[in-house]
Amino acid sequence: MTAPKLVLHPQACDAAPTYDAIVLALRDLGTIGTRFALDGNTHFQTGPDFLDGIGFLGCAPSIQLDPPAQHAEPAARAGRFCHIQVQAPTERPRLRCKSGQGPRCRRCRSDIPPDLIQAPDADIACPDCGHPASLAGLNWRQSGGYARVFLDIWGIHAGEAVPSDRLLDRLGHLARSDRSSGDGPWQFFYIED
Ligand SMILES: [Zn+2]
Image 1 (cartoon, rainbow, N blue to C red):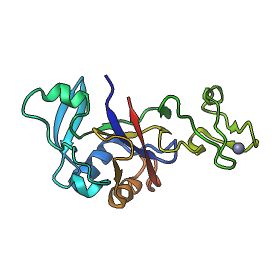
Image 2 (cartoon, protein in one colour):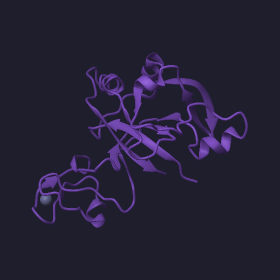
Image 3 (cartoon, protein in one colour):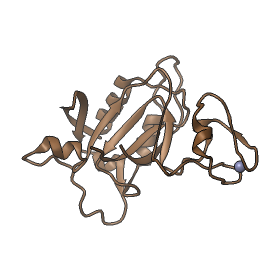
Image 4 (cartoon, protein in one colour):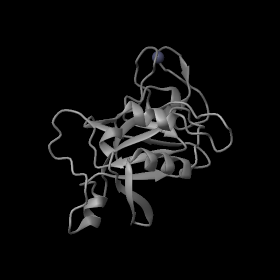
């Protein structure tokens, strides 16, 4: 089963703030609340200040912030209410993207064919203009990302909400696990996975 998600991640694909640092920041901001388990993973209900971190666009009439009284587990799995999952840093960056909507060249805007995306370590040369880019440096058009850390906000459809500057700013100042300086800016995309 898939669920709609708004996914935040560091722009730099080697950036890896620790799981604990991310959770602490989200707690501090009031973005996350009670912890619960779903399919063996830790998730969090929305916190008291969730709406300071995530801004809904338009009227967004159907946004459910709390789990239903009954059948909460299938509802969580389908993303029928908002909850948050921090994915711990992986050793290497991972690619997550919407199938059928590949990235574009940042220079000439040509679509990058899927077979060029198979070797994530090498720079990818745009087939049209030859402009080289890393996987993380392509224009994913908010439909994918390449990172070691992902922060999934379940229950948000594409374009329905965006992270606030306050949240992005806080995440951007998290220290790396292996350095003392901040990890740099975060960005986001929408996916159903
Ligand atoms: Zn190009």
